[in-house]
Image (cartoon, rainbow, N blue to C red):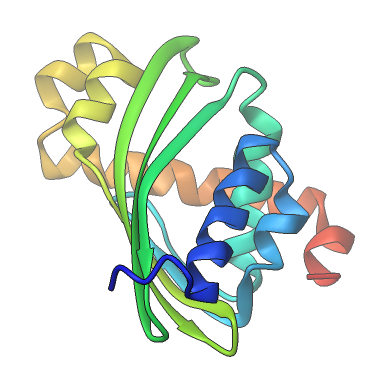
Length: 165
């Protein structure tokens, strides 16, 4: 899975370059219409995937994204990336370290799985509460529920843009 000449390497590079520019429409264009995205917080399909990136780009006014170790073949790919931003709910700085795995079909991303340490993230984003309780299922489920509510509300406010994806 290391063919740098493979077009899926360029697809991943294009995706992260769009993210670094906070260009959510360009990010969404990298996915199939029935794509599936998951990470420790979200489990999304279809238009929800593009909507999540649009929401994160909109909220991440000081977002800085770096990526490396991009590799792919015709079926699958991977990358390492890091995001630095201020968590909007608390105003706390976050440096999230993420590994991504992808599958492809017809030059687009079909599945995208991001892996990161949610407890580490919660310590940065939530402070003492995250440090003390971020490892517990109760807090992890609360983070997921809050993120889902936030995405649902964002999608309700941006119905036309979501429908156009």
